[in-house]
Amino acid sequence: MRIRETNLNFTRTPANRSSTAKYIIHHSYSGDVSAQTIHGWHLARGWLGIGYHFVIRHNGNIERGRAERTIGAHARGHNNDSIGICLTGNFMINVPSKAQLESLVWLLKDYLFPRYGELPVGGHEDYQATLCPGAKFPWDTFRTMMEGEEEMAERVILLNSEHPMNDMNGGIVWLSQRLKAPVYFKGTPVKAKRTYVVGGSTDKSDIAGEPGEIVPISGETRAQTLVALGKFLEEV
Ligand SMILES: [Zn+2]
Image (tube, rainbow, N blue to C red; front, side, top):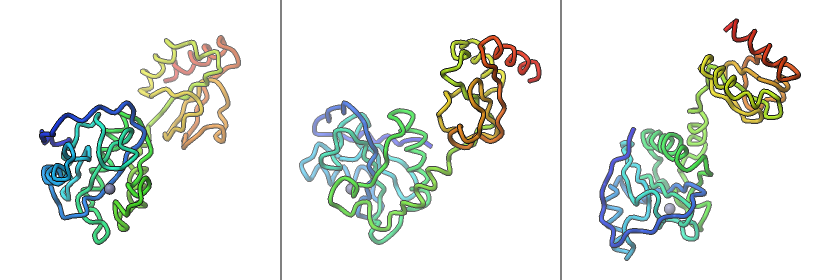
């Protein structure tokens, strides 16, 4: 998926945000209109141009609104630290299309989260006295889609930051490459078929998330751990 550039002309360039703390969802309270059309509406209000950063059409196309690093005009009191996403339609009467929801999930998880962080996602109604994005906006379905897209990793490595192995960066990198597995510090929630724990407890209840099968690679000391690691690597 990708974002369709619209190259809209603003009366002047909006200032950049100094921080981004949340994502706010809106509906256009209209039919399926283009970012260009909404731009016209907002210009007519005397604004610099379209107030949203993104517009998601019925067919799932994502159109660029305001440049994403700039201050939007979509939720009074929250424009300075939020990104505004508008789904076209009137969700007081209708529901968003499947394509719209899928694009919204993609935009958040695959595009915005890596750039700005996994920040809270709310409706306009959570921040201002409004019914936007509409009483029929399917929050449960949307939240399930957001969670459901979480991929179960084949394997991950959990590293106890207190353990003497923690300074064995070379060894851990080597292990990570050999297992083709990402390394996380213990305490990070994981979702994997198999979790290799280097140092620390291998009690399932001590590991956040869904660790799957747990494979310990540990000794009490750094030397013992290296021996355990060495044996383990011979077996891999
Ligand atoms: Zn709104």
